Structure formats: C-alpha cells, structure tokens
Image 1 (spheres, rainbow, N blue to C red):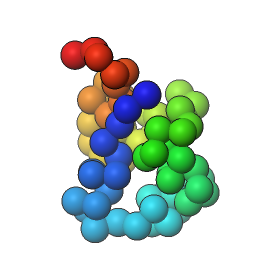
Image 2: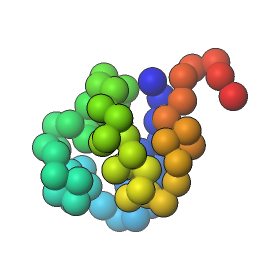
Image 3: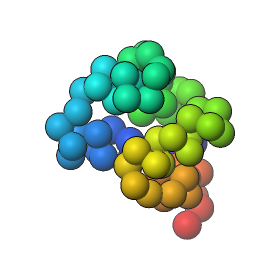
Image 4: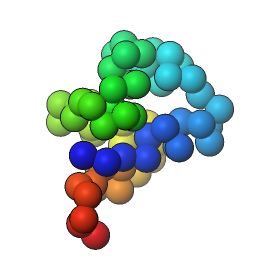
Length: 66
C-alpha cells in the first residue's frame, strides 16, 4: 500500500514523533506506515485522513491503480 503521509507530514513541519503523539501511536508505527512496511488498521487510517483533512482514498492507494 502506497501513501504520501511523509510528504504531508513534512509540509506541516512535523516530526514522526509529533504525528505519533497526535494520533496516540508510536513513532515506529508512523515510520513503518510511511515506508510501506505496515498497513494501518482501519481506525488509524481514518484518523490519519482526518488529521490531514483528506480521505483515506487520497492518502492510501495500491500500486497500479488510479
């Protein structure tokens, strides 16, 4: 699963730790999601989308899909 969380986070001048604290997860979780090594549970995906004022569909996508 691909995402642009790192880009959105950096644009807001946030560290992984800042984002993790805002969402009540670990920094390692944010790092793993950004690197595509971990697909978040549905609740966290919605929390991330809400945080970045977007939709889950805009935040996450599969390779080769529109």
